Image (cartoon, rainbow, N blue to C red; front, side, top):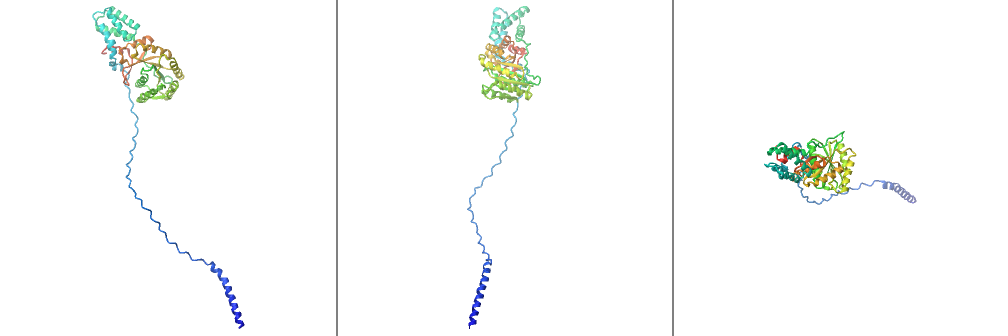
Length: 382
């Protein structure tokens, strides 16, 4: 039975050896796939109530900006004739007063004294009045004139002669050598200078000129705005500077801009000056000198208020010394009975009145014509 024991031992050894050989393979065998996880159903988002929005109406397209309609200034030819009714006050005091005296049956010394007083009260001036009366008396005596029509003719001739119809009253506004003509506008405060400057621009445009305006009145804030408004109505360009800036620099830039744009005329509005303020007058002289660096000033126009009467002569004298005034623009002539100031200005200074203002309208500035003016004063139908 001993061999049986050995057999059991051998079998046990074989079993153990088999287990040693088979166990690693069992460990290396792939595990079966894990069962799929159950599909997760997302929770439904909470329902938020939505308020319906009305559809916005279509936005209307902005209208296309239209260019402003430019005004066409009235022709200057015949303006004085059209505006003759505006001289009613001067006509009553001067024209009709003189004709009433001359129509008397007998022209004695008292009658001639009345003629002289009427002319002086109309601001004709003492010396021109004496000359007119002496010539009228002599011609009346020599010709034996007695009828009202004949006396009226003589009076017309004397008044027209006193206004010197041979004086050149045209505006020097035509460019020369490719450079625009330069017109300098001067005057005292309150004479309507800036407004008149705008009206002068309309006169030039009505006569076919192109214009650039220089707003050299930098001390009055409203002056540049006022001038810009006048210019915009007729399509003219304005050169302006900062408030309180150097007027001479603005004037210089205006002339330069006019040359660049190729316009006919540069019109420069200066600040109103009191004739007794030496410093301000010196500054006006500076404006003139600076502008002349571009070339000579073609025209210097002095704006005078006709209602100031003889005081305007002193203003004209001082401005003439500073600026070499070449022409006078007499404003507010429709508001005074002293139309004789036209004669006084010319006789005292030898400067022609070139334009007269006869109203507030934009085209109430008329080229001055001695014959038409006297006819209007005397109530002629011509």
